[in-house]
Every structure is written in structure tokens, then in C-alpha cells.
Length: 272
Image 1 (cartoon, rainbow, N blue to C red):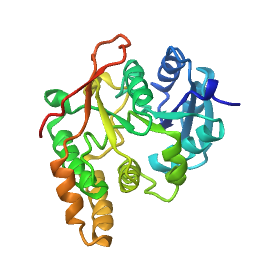
Image 2 (image 1 turned 180 degrees about the horizontal axis):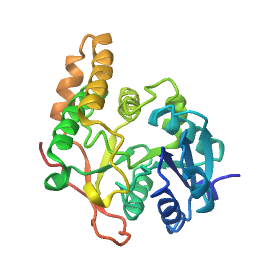
Image 3 (image 1 turned 120 degrees about the vertical axis):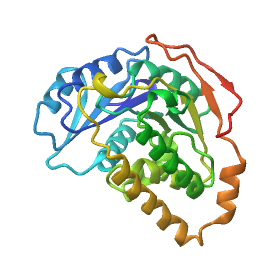
Image 4 (image 1 turned 60 degrees about the vertical axis):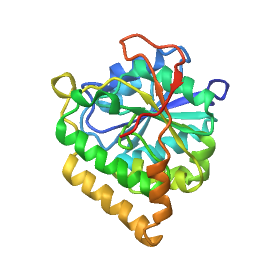
């Protein structure tokens, strides 16, 4: 089955997401583009796969839990096989709103060579302090290793150009866990691929269907060690550090309401 007119395909990595996956898939399928949705069930023992399929998703199943990175890589490969022009990713726990995806897809159409990232940086007051601090640490290191300033390097709401994923082999050689999304940004940045951020809404706490699988201290430590390995192999790349500090990120300001938003306009980058 091919993507509709080579349009976007949405990838949802999912592990024990029975409480939320059906609603997320249904919301994705109801977007104006009516995109195909691929759910990669990463060894769930609950009804994640069944509920995703009932909501209209194409389901890929891992027999055992292999990590978010492995799920994304398999989803990317499946999307490219179906002829996707762009591949979006969204987490399966409900942290990100499907209503923010049209804004990212609009920016991806306007900047077809960029990786588009949904950024929560503008809503610092709504993020748990430990999560915000950990993400900022990761942003610094990932930006340095990629040689470009990256805003919200840990966001799971993204749109990738198909050509970038194809060039990177869908990231199959990268970290299999939460470090995957950082490593793919590093590899893309080393090939001259920049990111562009879009402001999105923030959801944390009791509004989520379950507690996050992400462990801020442990997982950020693993990400930093992975990034440090890249830098050490390049002699710490001081030029990359200077460029990542001097060149501000490009950010798009979008309406963060419960309704779908029109294509937003680029706003000047803000420091910090």
C-alpha cells in the first residue's frame, strides 16, 4: 500500500499504550491529510496492537521489547517502502497533541529539507523542573555534536524528510532506546541537515494515560555519554561547539489551542 499521493505517514512507537493508542490513531486518521498511520508495538503485553488496528493503523509487532529507537527505525523503513514523502513521529502516551501536527506538516512543506521538531521550550513553567533541566543539558550536547543549534532535542513530535531518513538508513545503526532521536539529529546535522522548531502545547502529569517510560536522570545520562562518544571521536570538535552557540535556532510560533492551526509564520529566534 502506497502513501496517499506520496504524502506524509505518521509513525507511533508504542509500548503498553492500550489506554491511549486508539484515540491517538483515530485523531491522526481524522487529520485533513487523512494520513496513513503505522504503529510499532514494541512487545506490549496489553491490547495496544489490537486497539491500534481497530482504530485504523497499520501495525508492526515486536515479539519482545527492543526500545523506542528500534521501533522508530522499523516504522521509518515501513513508511519509506510505502512511498512517504515526509514521515511524522508522535509518542503513544498522549503527551503530544495530534492537533499540533498540521502546523509541523505545514512547516515541513515550506522547508522540505529540514527536520521539523515540536518544541516545548516556550512553556517552561508547565514542564516539571527536573525534566526541563535534563532536556536543556541534552540540547546543549546534541547541538554541539550536530554542529547546529537544536531546540528541544528530546521532543517526540517531529517530521522528517524521506530523503534524510533514506540517507541515514532509517537510523538502524543508531541507539535502540531513547538516545535514537538524539543520534539521528547528530548524524543529520553532520550531513548539513538543519532543524526548525515549531511551538507546541505541553502535557504532563495526571492528564496522561500513564507515567512516562522516560527516566530524566538515567536516560539523559545515557544520551550525554552517547553524544560524548561522537565528540571524542572528532577531537571534541571545538568548531562545531562555536557554531552551535553562535547560530540561533529557527523557530516557528504556532497557535497552541485545541483546534488545528493554519500554517504559521517564522518568528525571530530567541536566545537561551
